[in-house]
Image (cartoon, rainbow, N blue to C red):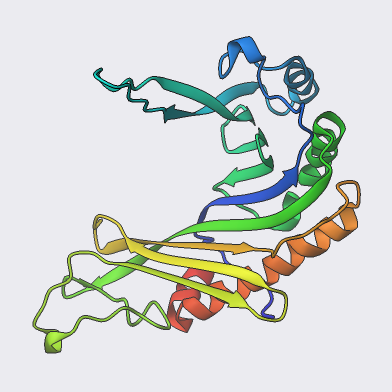
Length: 262
């Protein structure tokens, strides 16, 4: 596996680590009578424990619709909100941890200083999650990194060939002018069973460059890890990290990597 590239201009805009878990049947993020409005008493205790580093609390909800139709009557479409996660957010809003309905997440926005910088805090907050949520097993580990790479323009066209090892190309012998592009790939590492999803997508042009989002997700196969066995969890995090770094260095061209190093 390739070592992590040393980049002066690291293009990561967000990194997310998800630990999906089997949780007890009585695990609650909100009080039943105030779903998606009032956090559960345990979450209140977590908020107090994290208040020094994460003073802001947010509730992430989803809106669902249930459709029922009665004979000779109009369909009824009641909407309901479900609480998906409680987010504990730093004052500058660049870092947060989440107690989710399905597990634990750690999010870091730019500036991103490398995973080693955050592993201690991930472990600390994970142990608090284990203490308060009592997960039975860790079922999957997932690492997502979203990069924003500025691709220079040459004669008004983004230099994709000079920026990516396997750049998307247009047919018709160069007669067409590219407006935007979206490329998605799914793969698997047969050695460890790691699933991979890669996305390259252009954004609106800026002065002298076109921003391209390189979104990579690497995910473990189904696991059954003891939540208190941090060493085994960390082993999977590092395994995903090594593959993520390899995908990054092999997706970008040597010229693009050099631009990011200088």
